[in-house]
Image 1 (cartoon, helix red, strand yellow):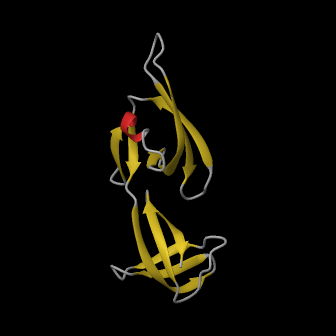
Image 2 (cartoon, rainbow, N blue to C red):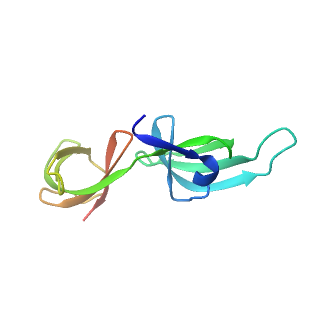
Length: 130
């Protein structure tokens, strides 16, 4: 998939606050713990994850030799042109491309306001209002 790149799990697991892609979803690493290699296998790593779009938490256990996918995350800022239902229509500040983003609860969103957005695995979200 062009939406993520591969990396050795042992490198990724060292980085709390970084992102991983598991089963077509992008997650932020909240915490991790490693177990020593057993008699019949390699060391295991358990990572606590949070879906960057839904906020849902999940645990993942794998060997430290696994290959992990890292989502390619784009970030940018945009000006809100209008809000229609639960969609925010905005114009990207760099490319002038029109973006249609889902409304995020608890944010102060209004026409003419500036937002920060992020995209990963083909999904968009508003990461911050200004």
